[in-house]
Length: 265
Image (cartoon, rainbow, N blue to C red; front, side, top):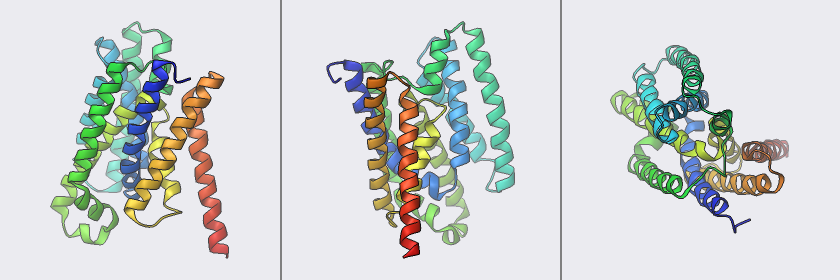
């Protein structure tokens, strides 16, 4: 399996993606932004289609669309009803735009399938270099704002008295989340990227109760899911996104069962 360059690239890419999911996933779950993450995956589809329409890299299009939408939604305010309504509007609009761009770009249906479900075969050395560079940049940015982001995410009462910082950190976090979605979609696809960014972290919180512990365990769950998913996809020739979603869901079921048994005792 590792004799093929695209498989080696896939495993390396999955390692960096798992690190991103370890950091971002914990804060996605703690900040209850899973719904927005799902919307970003749909916006990412439109961005990738836009990139194909311009005959450039789909990742560039995804970054443009997801970051712009994050800025727009981040400036709406903190009212839940207003933000959810805005997210719903953007979700419908960008799905329509994605279909439009694919239609007028005369792109083969296989490209649309790769955008939605990911493709390990489509990862080249240039894609890998871009992914590694963006991953390192996102991780560095997270570490720079880590203390403030942790305070903002896990201490709702305290962050309420720092509204100025709260808004700025929220917007920065949404931009980083948008960038993460754009980077990771190459492996798992835009349709199921929210699963990799939410399920491992949701499972990890049942086993550990400190932030760094959750980040580490989320990374481990993500890495096992992506590496096992790549291997099973190679063996069966079935979509890698299916195996990743199934494996991560199994981790979550195990975590729920463990929590129920522990509380029962």
